[in-house]
Image (cartoon, rainbow, N blue to C red; front, side, top):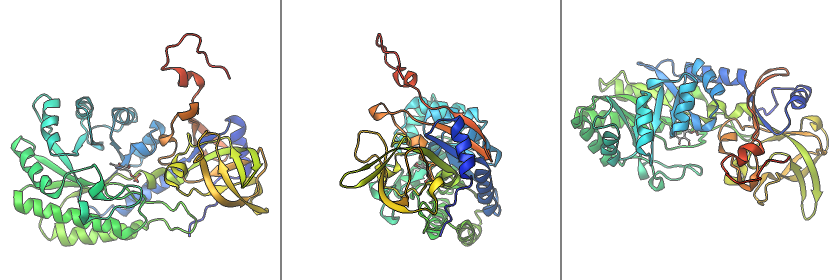
Length: 422
Ligand SMILES: Cc1ncc(COP(=O)(O)O)c(C=O)c1O
């Protein structure tokens, strides 16, 4: 079970919403810091060091990246914009991993200029990268392994053998051999096979799979892998009846695998990395919205001033996000579909959800929006994305991204007379 009590009071929230119009995402800075420290502490045993490269796509805001950098994290990027956000937040050099997939040459060049560790997605990208960088590969390279049928995926990420990412097992050996021939001297190994996975054993199995590969790569090619990146994917308890992943279990299982495989083979120290996004910021974000309308037709509806432009996950994956109505907690409940105003019928934050019966004007809080929340937003139907606020305790907060305006929406159109009107 996971306690879904809000960290702020109704009055604190009203005080914030009196200063910034809803909807907005509110991120709990203190909780993010506590959680980042717990992750770091869980892996303090790793000889050579552990680092989580925060998946920037989960929450691409430099204010948050700066906090995570202060807590010892690097950045995992897969676009030029994400690289630039890291650079601005002081995450530089090998504290950045650039995980490519269908990557254009200019993105590789930018990642290389920043000194990022480049994680290649395909055998053919070795030559492509070499050409992109003017004939010289970086000193160190990482390859993404796709284990195919050897590993089960899950609903969000799909089955590995149907995923577009990574090298097959045979290609991996060929890739390291070829990269060494071309002058690469330092090597890393990566995989990313899970998303929102709550079973701690899954991460231990993934680590074991990669550690076995490290041993085999050394045996067959004489190449020492110095960094193993287990990817992200640690899940979070979106539902109150779910349990957060026990980091001590994950870490303890990985340590046992490390000792029996890498230490026993004489290949330690090997650094361990992860690139978790969701578990780092997800539970500490809240989408704060107000009830605009209630409507009773064949079903009962509560309409909010937020919509799927602010949070796609329920409409896109049918994902559960817990919902609290701070002013009505403990009061009579009723079953509603909770909707936004986007002109798509899947613009629903919840379907058939029993909640304390809200009234128009009430604040409604949608939980666990701190990762893949605001970031996944879009402008379909001319909907504008909301502000992001950093909550520091009480009624103290900072606006770390303003809400989009019609000027922003029209900015890429060159058309006479198109001036924003409220
Ligand atoms: C390459 C890569 N690394 C890390 C992540 C972060 O995953 P999560 O936020 O589930 O930890 C993703 C998510 O899409 C990803 O594609």
